[in-house]
Image 1: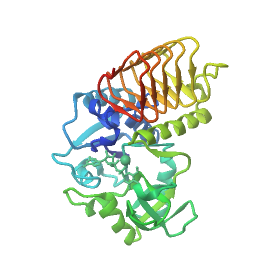
Image 2 (image 1 turned 90 degrees about the vertical axis):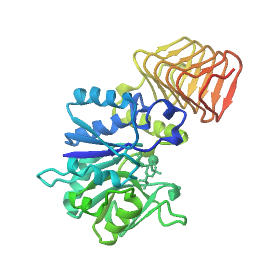
Image 3 (image 1 turned 45 degrees about the horizontal axis):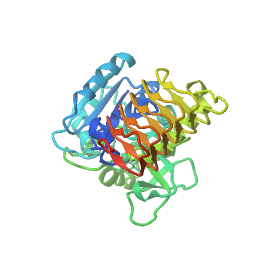
Image 4 (image 1 turned 135 degrees about the vertical axis):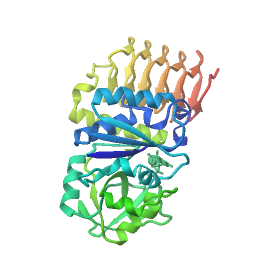
Length: 356
Ligand code: GDD
Ligand code: MG
């Protein structure tokens, strides 16, 4: 089985992290975002993944593909647009890569969503309704920033889709498109090779032909393409690990580790720190003594110096937070940022360079 992951967005909402690395490779839970998806696809029997990219990707994307093709024993290829083709055009461009002799359906995924990926259940669901397309939906409080899916049988876990409205101006429902699709090859016949949106042009059409079905995604879901949502998604993901793979979390150690925390085995944590809940510490990080961390990510190679406090924030790769500094309230530090050794207080900032 094959899959295409839409990885072409510019990731502007996740700057300054995406100034250094393409959004799909930004770490989440100490793994590049798209690795969560590629591993889930493999577990569901996918053998070939097409990454739909739209602008010149740095070397780092190629290195990722080379590394994980080997590690996962999967075929991972690029389909590169010369201009952005939106969320449907890339499928037309990759047409020959997606269709195989058996006429099997293929997965399409947005690259910035995180969930439990119940892809085997989705294959079963798709077989059972035997229509053209399946999408996963999830319930949210504020549906206005997503694609809203109105099901024919509201309240049911599975149903035919009555209508699909991308980013509606008025309330139409609380079930939203989770960015995970299983499509028959025939859907490709509806997509022209031009910039076009699957949410605005293709799904409304398939729904009106009564060939679109939706299943409610069991478990957690989050679009992690914005810092605040990234941290919410991290909290959900860590809670999921607590239930399903508790061995990946640090053991609560009395006064030092609280709640759900993961730390790479190469990270060094000093004395008299208070870490957690909801913290991820990457490889090679140094957390000096007396540091307080909660609701945050500290990415690979970063150092948090003595008595600093990082809360509800993201510390990008190879950065340093100085002694006694406070980084709080959805602050995002990019790569190689230095926060000075002083009582600096950063709240809700987006920092690319050194601050003094
Ligand atoms: N190859 C390619 N080319 N990929 C693209 C392009 C493009 O021109 N434009 C966007 N993408 C990719 C993004 O990288 C992302 O993985 C996916 O398409 C969706 O784009 P976003 O920019 O993240 O869209 P969104 O978050 O506003 O809305 C989408 O996701 C929601 C769920 O998270 C829609 O699919 C909504 O309907 C959905 O609810
Ligand atoms: Mg998104």
